[in-house]
Image (cartoon, rainbow, N blue to C red; front, side, top):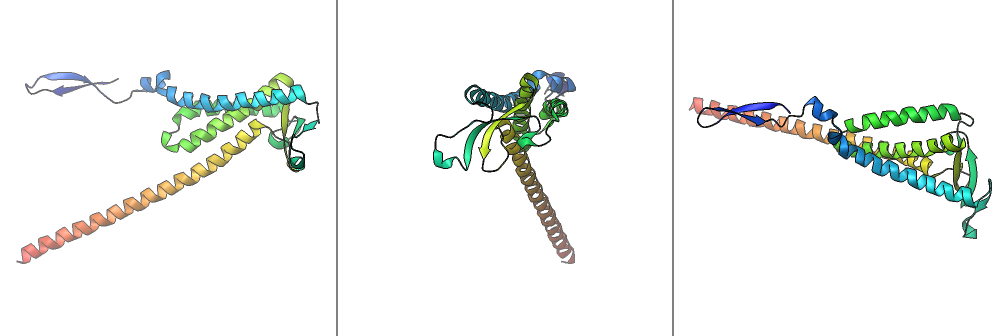
Length: 216
């Protein structure tokens, strides 16, 4: 921290700790502890839930086997054990190595950039946490078994998993967050414009009053 001086009532200078944050403070782990705790809590929960549900499916259903305890829901929603070598929702099949490298790069960018995001933009922090958890959940599959396990089937939609859902929800939260941020900026700009107009009105009123006083 930078030390500052101030003068007491006797005219003597005393040193007082400044409240300004130095570059060293910002580089410390403690400075970012709250950010990374938030990131680990959300992303870690997604990873654990994703791997736990995949493990249940892999241990109880053969590949292509489906299960639904409520028969009348089977045409609409069901659990089915499926393999995926592509990205979320079955896209880009056989692009596993590229997707593995991309997941590593994206994960590193999120971890490095996350503390730089202001808490005022909390939707972006939530979105990044969800996307990191989803990306790492599927990355674990690629590195351990060579493919991604999918099991949630809804209608004719491609089979997906918890990690895929987390990535998609993260994108939705990001879009909503951007919209909220834009609305906040517009509101602040309107308030500033109104304050400026009020200041002008006050200045003109004071000027008119001074002119009237001079005329008298």
